Image (tube, rainbow, N blue to C red):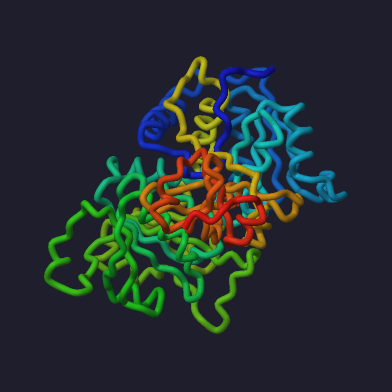
Length: 438
Ligand code: CP
């Protein structure tokens, strides 16, 4: 049975917005308070869960969510058991499964897999974690856990610690927290910081600024007592005007993550940041909620599990009910409507930009030209529309005048978005028939 209307799917936390989240949290509360009202909400619906990377929480909580709503489940729990092992493309697999199921939950090792799969089928794809890019339903349950603890988000301070470079959960959560005006203290392991372009994009998108703040515990964790802080420009901290690098006096939450060895993380002889029972005595953490997407390694010792600030098993327990709300949002807008997600452009594959510079972009494995999309209004940039990697575009052609300009020029800025044609070099543009316009 195909239920209409549906949302197009959920690929990244960029699609989340405050009005969707507010209504989403209310729906989760309804589902938790009155589970029997929803027992047959998806009767006759088929959900496919395709996990090409290992998972405990995400796959099983999606499947529990489907069963709680009366849906049936088809599952591929291991890529080796599917025709992926024979070399079938992700696009073909998504197209075929789209003929069997009403919604596909996908986990995949490549960045942008969920977006690519959604172009091959018209059933909604829900990203269950793709490469180092996104894990938006983990973000929904992280946000819901914080919402239960905090109420409002604005003005709160959250530290994010560990492998920011390779981990998708931290990246995905931080984007959503910036949308909600949360101050974020960055505590990456040595050599495990994310790329500067991700942070610049976030600062521009949410009118945030970057500053530094200090605390002795930051030194224990990262080897540097000073940490980068991303915060809304509107947020004023009194001590900011008294000290060059003010002391951070409180963390409202700390989001710990494990080292992603399977994605190439390596700290050599260095130490990986984690929490200890002794550190929990520090006033910085007096009311700090401890979150972790799990699975954990040594960064989060079991000896602190009974501490009232530990929220990570509660976080995991909320997985099924949060994912029930995701299914209803995608498949039962007729009966349980939610405000729309923010559309993220699918991009334009007509270009001479060459292959995506990100070696882990799904476009390489699939043999596809990665589409580009435009971001920013004052300062325009171009991203791979699959994996969000910044493209080194230096020139902008105008399809209406057939002229090409340096991207930084006023003339390039005046080109309407629908007429833009990006180029890496002036020669590429001239070879494509554009004339130099200065
Ligand atoms: N948090 C999370 O994604 O866990 P799994 O890898 O077990 O799904």
